Amino acid sequence: MLTKRRNEAAAIRLFTKALESNVLPEKIAIDKSGANQAGIRGVNRILARFACPISIQIYRSKYLDNVVEQSHRFIKRQVRPMLGFKPFLTAAATIDGIEVANMIRKGQFRSEVCPFRQFAQLSA
Image (tube, rainbow, N blue to C red; front, side, top):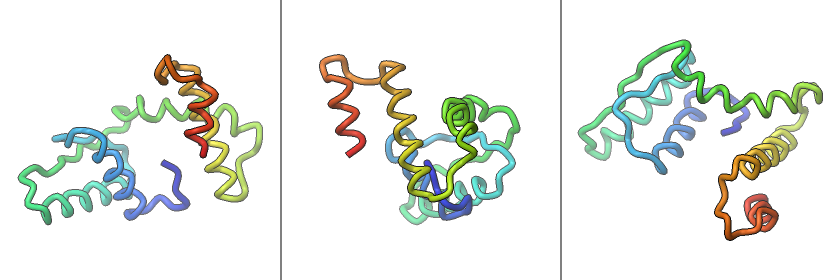
């Protein structure tokens, strides 16, 4: 998820979006980012407000989130020669296109749907 700032509000949005489509975890491994820790604490406050008996435990590790971090290497490989982005909207549009192209390449779409039509639907 691309955001202009890496702060608590952005981290809470990231974690709530991730938790909407996945099972509620018991533990989350994060790096040393204070924003991520604050975001998980914010999610725990939201869970407590809804009387959820489970709270997410934080496990801080420098290396356990490497699988997630490795997903950025395709984007970094294409963005580095461009020397980054100036406007935020340009960055968002370019990264969306790179991600969709990688999803098509990995075969993460249903086979009965034409990849171009699915690309058009996702980019709309």
